[in-house]
Each structure stands twice: as C-alpha cells, then as structure tokens.
Length: 627
Figure 1 (cartoon, one colour):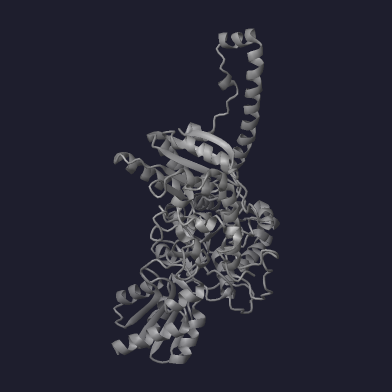
Figure 2 (spheres, one colour; figure 1 turned 30 degrees about the horizontal axis):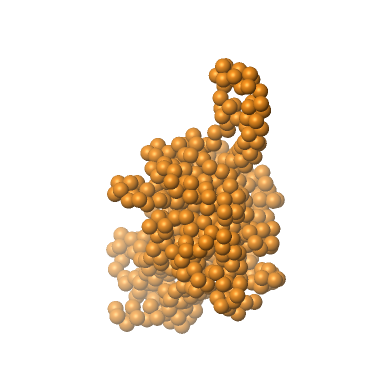
C-alpha cells in the first residue's frame, strides 16, 4: 500500500509544475503525451492510497488535458456530466495536493462543486444535466456578447436519458454556440443498455465503412470521367449516396467523429477546429474506461469506485462478513419470490450492481429490466406492468427516485396501482456527498395519497416489509440504508399488519418513537434513560391507536428518523397529535435543514448527533430546557 503520494518523485517531473490550466497551456504540445502519462500514474497512486472513483477518470486523461490546453478556462466553461470522471480535472485545476482528501469529511467534494473551485462551473452528481445547464450558460454568454465557449462532456450512458435529448432538441432549434463531447466508453456504472446504445454502435461501424467506400469511390470516379459526368447528369450526389445522417445531425448538431479519445494530438487538432466553428456541435470520442491499468480495463464495473488497494495486487477481496448488506438481502428475497411468482418483474434504472440485482438478472432474465438511466420511464413502465396484471418492483436509490416524482404521483398513486418501490441508500449514504444522501424520501412520499411507507429497523424486518408490500394492493415503499444489517436472525416470512407499530420496551415518563434503522442507537438511549421504546415501522399509515395510547401515558415523546425533520415521520406524529388536541411536548430528531456533505456514515451520524451519545445529549438538553 502506498504510504503517500510524493510529488517530488521523478515520474511527476512535468505534473508537479502544473498548478493550474494557465501553466498547462505554457507547455509545448510535444510534452503533453508525457504529461498524460504522469497524470495517469498520479491518479493511480492517489486513488489507490485514498480510495474513490477510479475507472472513469483513467478514461478521460487525454481529453481533460486537451480541453484545458485548447480552451481558456475558467473564462471558457467546461461542464462535466455526473462528475465521476472529474478527478483529472480537479488535479489540473489547482487541487492536485488535496486529491487524496476526496470524498472524505472536510475534504474535496466527490464531484465538481461550484463552491470548491472557479473551474467547477456546475455542481453535479446525478446524470444527464450538463447539456441543459450548458445551453443556459451559452445563451447568457450570447445575450451579453461574451466571447465564452461552453463545452459539455457527457457519457454514452448519460446521453440516453430523456433530459439530455430534451436539451439537445432545444439547442438544435435555437442554434446556440455549444459543444457537446460524447465520451463513448460503452459504460455508465453498469454496462449500457437500450436501443439507442445499440443503434449508435451500429452507426459508428457503418459510418466508418461508408467513409471508406466514399473515399475509394471518389478515386474511381475521378479515373472514369464519363461515369462521373453520368452521375451528375442523373442528379445523384456522392455525399448523399454514401450518407448515414446521425440522430444528432437530425437534431441540428454538426457531428464530428468518432475520434480516438486517447490520442492527445488528434484531440487538440479537432478541438482547435471546433473552437472556431459556431453553432451546436457534437464531438464523438471513443475511450476505454480504466485506461492504463489492466485490471480496470478488464473489469470497469468493479473498478468504477474502489477502496484503498495495492496497485500490484489489486482490490483486496471482501472480508468474510456473515452479516449481509441490505442490497444483498433485497436481491435474495427477490430471487426467492420470483421462483414462486412468474408475475414478478424487477426494474432498475442502470443500477444493477448497487441495487443487488446481479444474481437476479442472471437467474431470472425474463423477469428483469434494466431501463438505463431513465427513472421517469422506470416508474411509468412499472405502472403499465401493473395495469397489465403483473407485479412490478422498482429497485432504486432514494436520491434517484426524486427524479421521477411526477410519475409516482400521476402514473402510480392517482391510479392506486400496485407498484412496490424498494428504496435503497435511504438516509445517510456517506462519501458521495449532498447529491447522494437519501435525506428526503419520507418527506416527498408521505404527502402522496394512497402511498404506504415502511421503515424497517433491521434486515429481517426489511424482508418482512418487502413481503408485505409485495402482497399489498396499491403503491408501497420500503426504504432501507446503505451497508450491512446488524446480524439478526431471519424468521419465516409473514404479513406485517399495515400501520401497526410494536412496543419493544416499557419505560417511564418519555417514549422514543423510532422509524428505521436507528433502532440500535434508540435502544441504547432508552435503557440509559429508562424510556419506552417503540418500533413504529410505518410512516404511513401511522399507528394512530398506539400513538394516542403512548401520548396519554407519557410526559414527552421523542421521534427518531434518518430523514429531514421537515415533513418526515416526526411531522406525521405532530400532525396527528395536534388534530387530536393532545398537548404533549414532542422532540423531533432527524436530519437538519441543509444539504449534508461527504464523509463516512459513522462520521456524519456522529457530527449530526445521530449516534447513541448524540441522541441522548439532544434528549437531555431538550428535557432540561422544557421541564
């Protein structure tokens, strides 16, 4: 394992002098290929030492150098879609010496972040937003007569999303000066899927063949003047004979490519040409995810994001942990259920690995759909399956479900369709920062009529709630966190009574109403304070009978959830008590009213007072102030 990244190492003789893009642009072009090798080596050394997103950055080394070399950043704007690939960009733009702090508490943000650097034009983390934002920026530059170039870098996975095409449709119509670079590595996090991806692959092969035919035919026609005159006479045009107009050209873009994305010389040549070409343009480059590190080239999915590792050995094998992750538990339950019910259909928007669906996709391929980066479509597709008599399950991260909010309401809930939402990464996610924390789902789902919302407190309860939700009529949601459970034993599956909580401990004076997997911490505090402890289980419908009984028999209530306090489970408790005119002090403990930055789950919970010590301190301070 590397102990440090030493910039005085002779292999970084060029890179150590690059403190910003201005110093990069002073280099003679002939030295750039050597800089690219140093940058790739530095990325290998730094990520292996500190962990982080890995394979994507290795694939855009040459592109990153070429862009900052040709364009006058930060006057010209570079926008990186999603941001997994932005490590080389951060290194070149003055953050080289901080790169090992990336994704850590108080360190560099995992993605481009506006508050971190003037070179980060757009804060990102979710996919397919770059073209819309880039177009808006390009329009403002034109309105103010600023000589500013805007470049959006987007992958072939992200460009298939509807939002990207909405933006291109608009850009092609208003003819703004915008360059889109399509980084084609045939990957998003998972392998790319969909007709557009297949069509593009076919087009690029066909286009190369047509180019060769056109070139050779031109030579033949020039040698046979009479035949050339005949072609002209009947009105045929050689360009039309051998044309294969791209979808992008039909949208109003000038298409250039495909180019080798690892050839720094050709990239600089074409970028210089595009810099003086006005209007909407699309440059298509071919790259290899994980370029320069054989294990990552061979398995870019596994090497998308990595822990610390030894460059010579690779990623250390997973420790033999008998405690399963919630994602694995979901995947196993899914396989067991599909074995008995051929009507089950599992849907994921390009998150097969993260959502625990790898085994299911192989075992039950005819009951599995990866719809690509298309959360809106995933939800409405599920609605259609439900109408057709099937039982769809949408496996999705909390942070990505919010991208399909209207579809949840309009296409599922209003029609009271039986769709189960398996919401992974709910609550604190950790190192991916504010764009990925699952902090909002209870609040944005609770206000939707017909929705049942369940918050399991451990992995066995998660299984039971998935079972209950699957057999329930109407839309249901089960939200569970990133990471492992606590090692409880599994019981036989049974249907949990909807809207019913469970008293786990009877205490005095105060009662802790727990929603979700903070139950372990709540249990510790309940014993220390001799408090009643209740696993509420359901956020909607809330257990009104139990809540009323507890409120009457206690002096104060504490609600606990890993969701923003505003509009969450605690708010549901408050609303019920006020409606019933039960005047009892209530302390709502949950996530604060600001976006939570990166760090480990443990670090973030501790800093927010959501470990057992912090929860007890919040309760005691509140009691001392109010009693």
